[in-house]
Length: 231
Image 1 (spheres, rainbow, N blue to C red):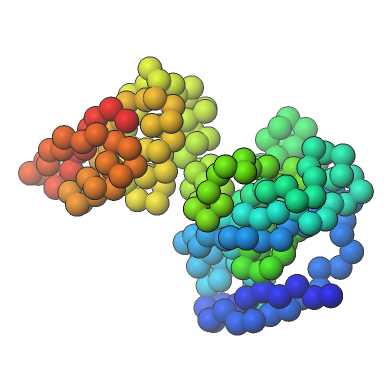
Image 2 (cartoon, rainbow, N blue to C red):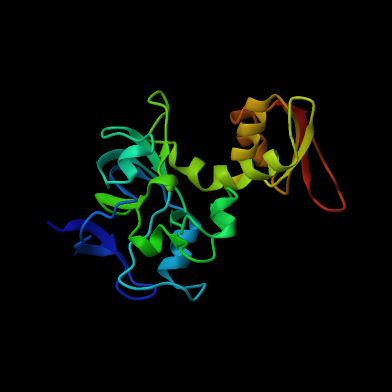
């Protein structure tokens, strides 16, 4: 039985209904029935082949929220279970045995890394990924809005871990956009103090909406708006 999706058949084309056969479920894979999938600018870049690595037909989407409906023989013993709510981000597969994978740095796998989009992405009814890229999610998390955590959220969270950011830290966030507002929310959860920088004074509402307390000032020379306060 085929999987129904929306795909770009050529670079830059509008998406259209597309059905494909996924083949037998591989031992390391989980199959997920999709509930929600976010839209990221990287999806547009892949659809338009901006980076030169797209293959067509291309099913975009890499901010995926759904529930497991099938597990391969090996994936059944990795702590996942049928019906579990999970998320899948940019990466769908890695080799499991290169130096990067064995050291827990699978995102830098150089032998078997496959992006979710080039593996048939989330603009579909079901998708498959290696078990280690299928991330269990709390049932209490709002599935309709959680997708961006799997892309922009991870992008900003990793450097916070690398630099040991804590409630004792004061962090500057440059730009209160797609990544910036997620950084502010995560920093708020960590208890850190935040100073956010933006060229648009009307972004103060976004800052406070993300949990920030702002008293802002504007530089006449640069036009940059600095909204500082405890988050």
